[in-house]
Length: 356
Image (cartoon, rainbow, N blue to C red; front, side, top):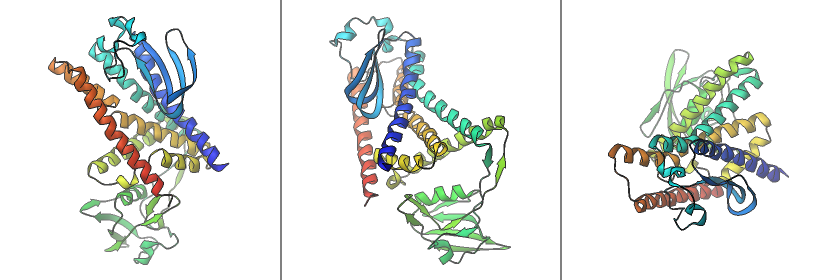
């Protein structure tokens, strides 16, 4: 039953995010008069299909991703011999629209994902009615088998700096330290303040199999403050911006070659969704907001197979006034798609390893 509910929660969340993302592309494309042949949720064989005025709306068997099939997409998915494409006039094809309209169509999905995340963060802040102030990295109590307790820390000690492999931070909050630990699993040198004295200790983070995170072994204390409903706009926006910052920092660490072991694919996200759904609607919606923002930012990366890459191609063509050959674009998209699939497989492999 636990896994069944988790699967349902996962599919509902992913479907919502895909509908919002592809809906952004669809609405803006239709606004500019681009012919949309199909709006699909999921991939693979068709489970259900309903013909619209000119667009077919489909639900497909594999609940990962989706697409809007627009006339004039230069991604290799269309051939001039395709029956439905033969009768579409040039003025209704995406690649015959002004460059700025093409870019708006491509960015619309990203915008909608970010907007969904913002609405959820703000709505949750309003419903919650209070804000939890960020806890400073000060020892309040130790967890079982605490690494920092074994290293000699005491209640009230404040961690003012952490260093590992030449990477140094001065954590302002407990979350800053927790995030740092996820990317530095070997020995970390902590600079600790106790009253008027400072000293250093070396600590090896502990990995928790159940939550799949590394930790140092202490809890900090945070204060909660009531807020008015309208203050939820500010609190939710701050949560939205903080979440975006975390995602960008994670991408930065990946570019440095760190954190690949933390990557999760569908199996890992399904597991987290199952656990989060058990905690209540608020936690589940918070995860939805975070995943929506992740997908939005990921799609903005300048990789040809993603929306951001397509925007980059259009911008280069516009600036240079030179159109790339269709074959070159298709090759770049295919190559980048293969690399993304390799990353997808690697992340899924990570997920499977965590079960053993």
